[in-house]
Image (cartoon, one colour):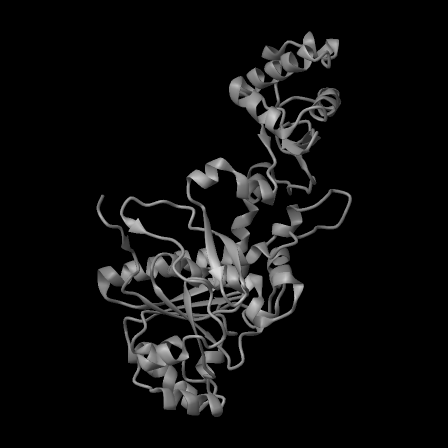
Length: 417
């Protein structure tokens, strides 16, 4: 078998991002780039976000930081000092990609914006991730996961119809933003490979999260009405406005079952009723129903409720495993809802090698991480190193630009690093 290569093995990245775009640098690191995470002296503020190992607040034991900053080396540097700026310019000379989440105009005031740095290296790629982009009336507004989820429109479709909109409990918007930032950065890097030109990649967090709306914009475009929140129900399948349940409680958790139309839906409905009847749990109107005439597009809420009530009663009597095996054996539509524990134990994910055990000597434990989900026949992509401690690689990285241990010690005393 031929040896796989790291796609970005010759690429050096300076990562000045906060939690908004940690994922961008991590993806580049997964692909083999030498990503150097730059923090302020004393550590990045995002290290103070929860959660923490054993719930003990400690910037060196921040599980969120560990999750999204592995495959990076770590240094500290205050670029607002003249000495710090000089050091950064030396680092830029050896850098291909510069990732940053500073407010628009901040780097320009320091003389470190793309226009200035590209004069030093025309091949430099700078990716700037800001709440609303580098232009427009909102460009100077601040943002957070709550802001991005709300102002992207994503929150408008989340929650129950009779209650205010909600957001996911974990900061999901940062994953969308980091993913799109990595996508844009890789496109610019590919362009540089073809033309030799660097460029500025301007990423708007608001615009990035808008993609999470899925079909909502096209729903409005086609129907000229806003999609409404439906909680755990599904709308838009029927012209009558009927709501369909998507999740049911079962004997040991939850499962997903939706009343579908079409050949697959008809087959699934028939076989579910047969299963229910084998346990004497199918009412006569289900056994006598002509599923070949069932049309999901015209189904009424009354008919949906009549179908879902006996389904719900039946599902409470089966386990997730029983349900999953039955739908597999009988070519039906339906899925168990996996918990975090079940994901770790899932045989398919184990067979794919998704989980990676990493020893953390500083924590005195081993942590299970998800590895890169995509497999390549010729590209090596995965987990190379744990997330860095504060300033862990100062001597190593600064040594690469000609500074010795004495220089590093002096810079630390002066609070430059």
